[in-house]
Length: 99
Image (cartoon, rainbow, N blue to C red; front, side, top):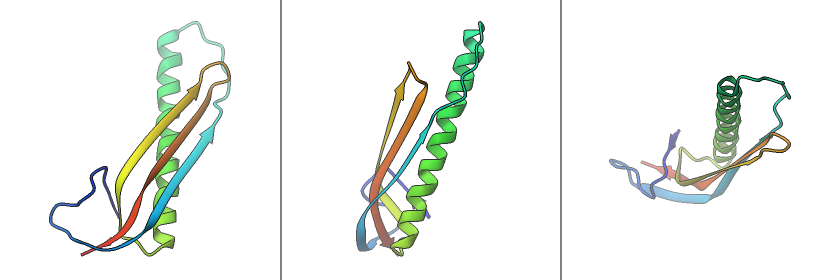
């Protein structure tokens, strides 16, 4: 499946617009006490990337359900709540059929 933030895909033409799709994932990392801030930020960055990948997978699954072979106009929103460690990733785009 082709995923892009642009509204067109070079070398392809959009045959059919199938609808807006989204992928959302929320995660609360396990709390660990560390005095090494570099390690803390590295772990937090890794967790954000994991949550983002899960949200992208959900986006693709939802696009597949509509019969799409691409998603265009993707927008990504990452929210964090530092006091609780919650990470929220929301991805939206338009599911399309391209040829």
